[in-house]
Amino acid sequence: YALNVVAVSLSLLITCGNLLVIISVIYFKQLHTPTNYLILSLAVTDLLVGALVLPFSTILSLSSCYYSSDFLCKVRGLFDLLLCASSILNLCFISVDRYYAVRHPLMYRNKMNVRVSVTMILVSWVLPILLLIAVIVRGIGKESPRSKCKIFLATEESTTGSVFAFYIPAVIILTIYLKILVVAKKQARRIQNIMKSEAALSKMENKANITLAIVMGVFHMCWTPFFLSISLYRIRKFTIPVVVIEAFKWLGWSNSMLNPLVYAFFYRWFRRAFKMIIHKLQQMS
Image (cartoon, rainbow, N blue to C red; front, side, top):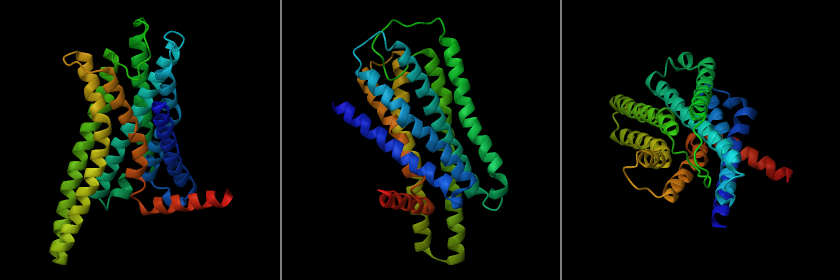
């Protein structure tokens, strides 16, 4: 019963939060920018995680039937791999976009235009699809003994997929945001030389540090425990209980709930859009 409540609550929060982002970007012309198109793609991916993966996972985890749910278990696992990999790649491209905005502010509009943004979105979907096809092809004929459906895959293919779906993007995200922090501090120093204000510099540096910590902290806090535990579980050097890995998986899925907060709620226009949408819904009800 407790798992049902947690699953339903998390699924609703993910769906509603990302739906607000999607409606805001589509409805308000002021939000039609290359950066927000990337956030829109991220929101669509996270919405599908909340609407498809979580309900399927809950049903299969609680199912007492070991055999009839075998096909559904595999389908759920493939959707999970596709959507989570796409979500992480979207986050990776958003970090690239933010780097150009900070590092090359004068050239940003020319470098990161709509065409580049659409290309990034296509890559963030096409690469997970190719990864999914590779997992399916390599898994053909490798039928595992029938057992209760797990919410994670611990095969050789899934471990290889983790490298491309998480470890490489995670390193890119960490590297880029550390570069953003360095650039932001340099710019703050220049502003200090102009304004001659130590208080202004301290305020800007603190804001940059807090933003960086939230952006990197949320992503790594949610996904790193799961991917590390699944790697250790696969090589069998450490005995990790399945229930612990499944708990880490739920933590990873919660990243789809936190993404709207991190990448949308910090923007003033998004906050205004959310208030207007919620006010409109209240009037309609």
